[in-house]
Length: 106
Length: 119
Image (tube, rainbow over all chains, first blue to last red; front, side, top):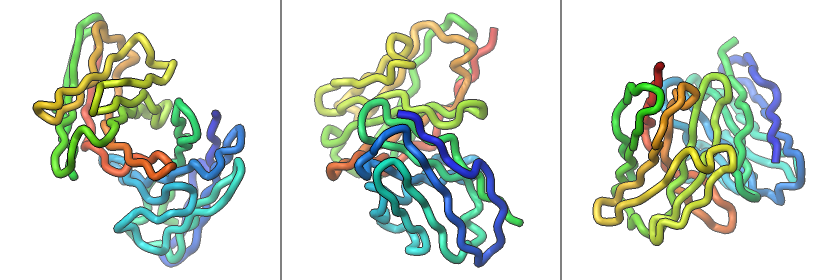
């Protein structure tokens, strides 16, 4: 399964709302996760099962979608949200990642 | 929950290597451990997973035959091993605990182990 994220990079300001899209080459039946990676750090799970918020993750992060198209929306961007975001499917092996979306400060 | 990985390694092509991932804060045999490679050019690549209860492994075909996963349940440690490194193995490697509620997700990650392979 191929995973394509868009955009590959995005510039926004604190307080903005941004949306990142992940498209799969086939129906994932909601087996889709989102991770955040800050520079020099390991990835961190944000959303699992397309829309479930991982414990401890702020509620401004929202996952949605179905079939082969999924989105991650971040409401009211905070300074700590400027990072790279990855989607990953877990529908079948191998559990492919998207190529990443780098969110930068405008 | 904590996963602590071994430190950076600098090796030559053709050499062997084993890196480790030591788990704490949960019952090690209850979860699978996944391995993920990260490079600037290819991003995050899922390498495969190992069941810590019985060492059953599932490999990404892209890595099958080149790496080996193992676990030591007496020390709560997972290992990623190469018998013959290539320059293209230069990367950051992460272990991650897999949790599952129908969906599979990587809910805790190690800090990463940097591997540099030179000729």
